[in-house]
Length: 300
Image (cartoon, rainbow, N blue to C red; front, side, top):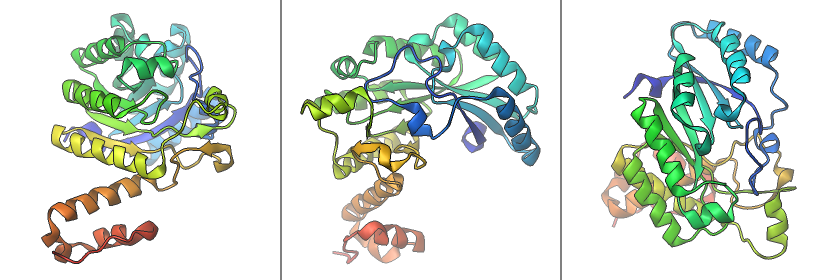
């Protein structure tokens, strides 16, 4: 396992900063629960994080915006001041938009100890990207991934099942693209309908229907089985649980969504290997009994 896989991560949120536009489903201020980014406060927080973990491999991560789309001078100011309080065991992780990756940007990232880049791809299918207003094509997203990988950065992807235009065919296409790209890790964020977004208006007009909770669980479990075969780590299922639930209009939100996916994966494994029912660990038994699960544990 890569040392970075065991790293401690300190998240800093820059909601909507650098984003070239607002996607029809997005409101990062509500999703993250964070206010405007305060660099002085972030420096103090990071410094305390470094002092608490002097010998650990660490990453300071920028989420919620498109970091490489920020003005270069602003990026330099943020990174210089954050790195000034970091120790040699600390690197930078950024989340960004596929259109804001090129050789010059990657050289700038390398200069400031960015080791990991997460791309908010959301979906690989052109029809879904167009319907969701993402502003780039599948080829452009693929080109960005290849540039990151060829430059030696760790690549993470973020996918969003349930976008407008999504279908079984587009999901199959997404699976094929994951096989082709093989990122180091993946986040799966089934689309949640948030109040005040453009997608709310589309939904109220009857032109969009979000995934049910069960459908989202099944789709994510399918991704998990594929990723296990490909050696791709899934590091997050579902939106952060700190979102104010009153802002959620519809969609497959659950505060323990990741646990529901893991429960489904265990149920699938037991159906394939029923003899395992008599060998379950206490942790597996607890998982099967959680959230009102009705799965029968009797071996066949």
